[in-house]
Figure 1 (tube, one colour):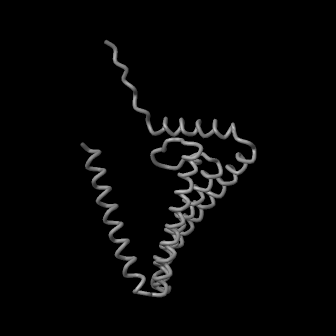
Figure 2 (tube, one colour):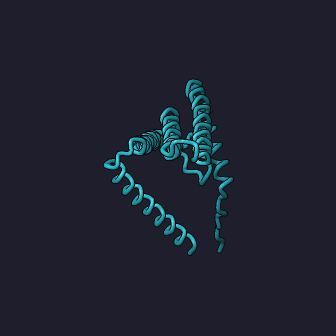
Figure 3 (cartoon, helix red, strand yellow):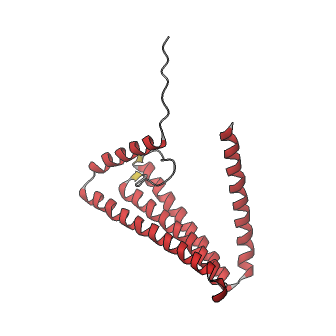
Length: 179
């Protein structure tokens, strides 16, 4: 009796496979779509640069806390968080334009490559999620800047609950993976 044991695919192999699928898909697309993909890659690089710049600015302001208005520090950190939502929106927009998801490979475990309407839904989900994230962080920054405690109190409570759920979920994932 012979048994076929499939070798588990490493993360690197999965990334290479996903990259080749994306390249094959792009090769079948018209030049306008390939050009839009190249342009969006540039926009996404600019988004990463914006995130890095916002992080550096927030760090510098945090270090110089004695010589600046203390309200500027949380605004800088909230702006840093909002920049990540902008990158999500760019990622989703590229998926919608290409009708392929993921349009780029980032760090972490690569997702399954999908095209067509499934990719459109995922792209629109990223756009909506990014828009909601930007709106949340900008609203929180505004409430912080104006020191409007009637807006800040429920936001702080919501963020506390969300962070607690995320921590418990992460712990649950780690516990179930270790078994």
